[in-house]
Image 1: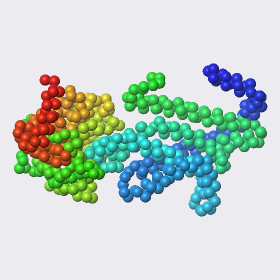
Image 2: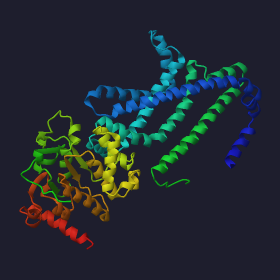
Image 3: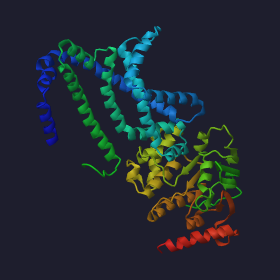
Length: 254
Length: 261
């Protein structure tokens, strides 16, 4: 509390505060821009939901290909490894530019040219790589004796994965998956850089037009309205899985 | 229940011929021959690392053998390229550490092999699974998850799980070694019961008195070979090999020291 009070005092007494107050906290521009920013934010939410659904499936698929040691799959496995390493190595913003501007420049018919779709693809590729690694860690964390028990019961490898390994793996990686959810939810705003009229883009246009940054604050507030409830729900879910697993909490509140 | 006496001249359920297995440069099995007759219980004894567990894993095709042959009901099962899945369905393997599935309750653990592997009707599998659990005194635990059960209960569930698919032979891999001493008895009781019913079994064990009581044939393993085999009486009362005598002297002395009575 003391720290927060101190920081507030520092900000409020700073020499630039009067002008910051005018350009960032203007009630007039807030109400002027809010409905447009909100409409843009709706695009963010839709993109997030669609991309996240694709990422969850694609990430699991990549993780499975990379864990199953069938010799036939070797080329695909290598491809997946390269994909994951490259995707994790490129800054997301550069990837969005490369795909957003590069793919239409090919002028191949059949390829999407809508920047919203292209940006969604870039986000999906990048996050699939991260999420596949999360899944893979989960799959690896299930002890080999579980697979042995499944096989000994006469289940096929696929059945053992489906009924024994994956349910245990997914349960273990729910907390890090939720973390990536939240990161993706915010990173959707990066698609603004190639054009789609989402919240940040709309706010930015307003800000440039009226020399006032309040619309950006409106966009930030909208993000908080979604992320804070998400974080709260996810934290509860995480605590519940921890309790369900019966592990005693050594630290923190009961 | 009338005990079924093993008939050594009867059908051979499992036959091993010159089975070898190495992990890298470590030779774990160096030519194992074994015959297991129908209704027979074979006990594998020997120090940790002598190859007992590996032998059982090889028979259940969880490990590929390097050389030799394994026959199940006269049919070779270790020919390269054979699909191991249908063969594993004809055998049951119970692990030292139970290896129950923590994501399923007790009844689902017991029935999944029959339902998914053998495509048994779900209701039929559940009824059969419940009957087995009742028989092992675990009927009231069917909806519990494995982590709520004691070690002895978990191992009895694991045995029920292996039995539901009606295996031709049951492979027991030191099934009491991970248990607290006071829980060993309830698991041995189940195995005794299965023996009386005529289940064909290979039992890797450190429980010498149990091996003496329940086995028709005892095999002493050392360094991946069966050094000596015979009836329990021969092996425990008048072992021929010095290695067998040394091993028995070591474990039996340990047993008398630790036994409470």
